[in-house]
Image (tube, rainbow, N blue to C red; front, side, top):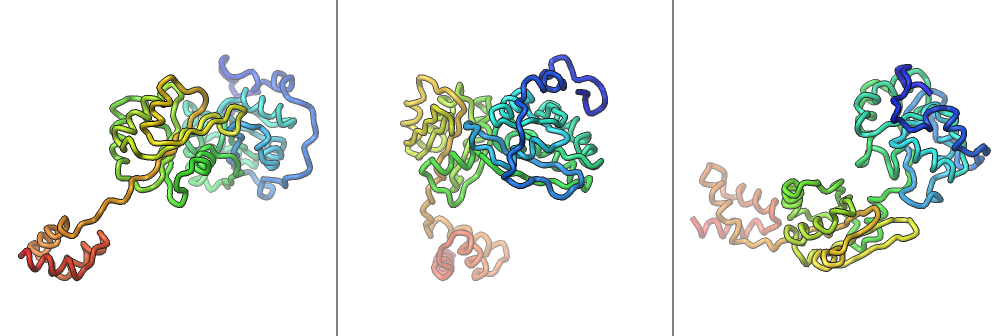
Length: 316
């Protein structure tokens, strides 16, 4: 099928983008009645849909409906999308287009144009939710600026799955994306997270995770608790829990499969009164009322305002 601009797709584009090739790869089966339509009304819109991170059976019924009803399906890898549709037993009649990190900036405006013209545009990544370490966030920005409706079809998430099974605190967490490839960039990024109190979730390459764990142990502390989750929801799913030192030793011989690393947040540091008296005095010397300076430092540290004030008086 032709490109958005009306030109043929490049020769290296997946053959699934040609109608005959796509037809040969997809099953001819009816859509299941369950699941409810994921589309809002009849107008054009963009729908970001989560796809399974491993087991195809985790696909929401609404994703199956969306695949069968979309006018355009923008996929990170169209071949993988067709393979998923085949496993789900769903026919994808819409136009299949590749939409990845290398062409997102170029194709986002044209996908928005298609939606503005009344078409239903479905966006999927290889696994998980589009725009989370995958293409999609630029497209959403362009759509919002153009006043085009954007909605989400929730589903599987490697971030939340790994966090839930890690055994670490889940009340507060942050997602740090892929660990930087270059050692200097990696070490700089980890150093900035040394005092992060929230549980941290990272994606990493199985070929680099051993070095990553070693760097984490050196920067965050060898005794920091962590979890390495590989092949989540797949046949050979494995979750290893322990200290960063223990996990580094486990990963020394290499790790296979898709990897998500979850690391405990930094333990709270002891706040001592004597470490903050000088700050109160300095603020007072700069012209601030001593009581106000003590109150401000107390609010920031959790220390007693009265004790800080008295200690500052004694110091002066």
